[in-house]
Image (cartoon, rainbow, N blue to C red; front, side, top):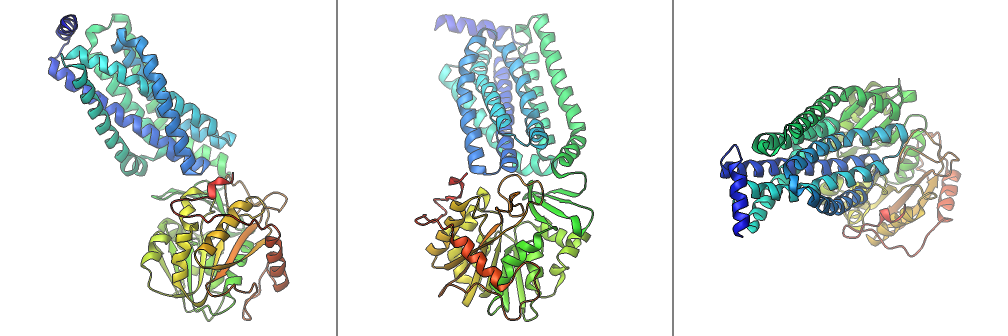
Length: 532
């Protein structure tokens, strides 16, 4: 203990600042580095969820790999404790470069190679190793500047680390993402990371550095910050090039909202494609097949009051409004940017026949699950025009609890129709939706129609359909007291894709692939990502 105290005194005497000041500066660096580290983690999770889908799986992969890698990094850092200052400076420069460019490289691999899973694991592993190497070196540095016992030093380090993580965790969704976006936000975080690590070593511990290592650290940090700044200046050009690689050359609108990325492509209503978070949702070339099959079987019966959950593009509302005796349509959409585009974009509003401008239509911004919990009205028809159940962010909207809320909103004799994914490609998902509806007391009738491939559509999607036409679209029509008949209303308008005999075939085709004995999906036990 006496030898340790002598060493600490000797070390403190070489510092250009007082020991207490030096300790605070080390803790400030811990705070900043921890905030940057958590931003890297959240950025990987968010971008992977957007590019790959299934946020639960992506969060599990990123966090588990990073925690494992942090353990490896801590072990590797033991070799650097004798040169803790220069080791920490180089590690922070490397972490700033890797973390800052992680979002850009992930997006590039997705845009040009169509695959980002391997890059995701690689970045999670590398960033985790570098973050794990920080604490052992910082522990050595803080004991260099102050005669604090090991237990007190550990407590201070972890306190600064956890508070920094809190700030980084809150800054990412509320500041960096909405103001700067994924790419520029990650690059700026890397620059801050490099500046904080470099400043600590080059100022507080400069007397521990040889002239050669001092210039090495200066060159490394200046180079990293310059490269990150250059990339930030070119980020918009890169994003446009990557977007063209993903969506083609006819991108007209690209908006990052608080909910998702919204992209419109095509020169007019005959070639319009709508993408949400990189997935094709609407193609004007065959959207009528989907929307006619979704809406018109449910309109066979009383349909004065209609509720549409999702469908902010206005296309389901267009089909509903073709019935003159519809008195009111309530449309609940999570993202107001989608309904705004449906009203103001010339091609999309022409495609939906200006349905959202009809005085009978009331648009509500909100989550469908939350809105239903407080809804007081009763509806003759409820149309669930929501993202595919295979996307984990949507699983609560395909749960037994959700269908229980919908059942309460149905008027006597009312019908619910649900888009439940492709029954041929993902039969387990489709029939799990059916089991969830039954668990809520509904009586569903399955039917499916064929479709055709309409464009690039990674992951679960309602607008793509296999190149051989087998993917198609699967639906479930349900009532409370009885199973509704599968047919068209006597006053149904002329349709381009449906007829009475065609619906009977659609019902028989779906029943032929029935899977029995599946458990329903619930809020506490979602089951839709069990089929991959």
